[in-house]
Image (cartoon, rainbow, N blue to C red; front, side, top):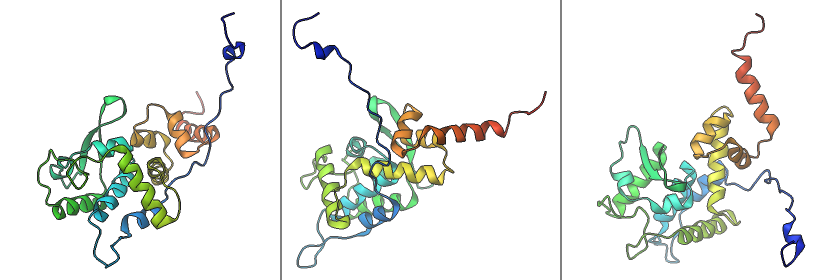
Length: 217
């Protein structure tokens, strides 16, 4: 037996992922992206539109906060407005593609026009000095907005979970399509995001096989 505490050799129990994790639902997302904040004299805050765009993009695509922070203005400026497809570097350094809704595209396009940002290499979301917003800065922005608008703590993963749950419902509860939308490596990870039990997964699988498998030979 090695020196030291023998209890270190004992493997701890595995903790199952919690179900019904907190999320930002559709109505809350609308409030977060539409509620404007002004100075005491009624003039618009210089960062108001940027902050609302951050939340609209994160909630409208399911991107991770690090992925939102890494985007450049070219993501919108060079985008085909018909397909609204964009590319980004995701978790693990892999390149992915996904789509914007028309509403989020219009909002981001208006934001860049308002800020007179025309250089595709510029950060999509920057500080007043033009430096790219850090992940921590975006987390603080989302948390502050959550308290201001919803009266509760909001973190980026709540936006991502909210997107995943909404996509899941609108896809006809297609867990595999939702896995692709969230760019998960495993359906098990997606299950944890949505709080779906294995009984639900079995129903989906049974429904798929029931449509195709013959009943006699």
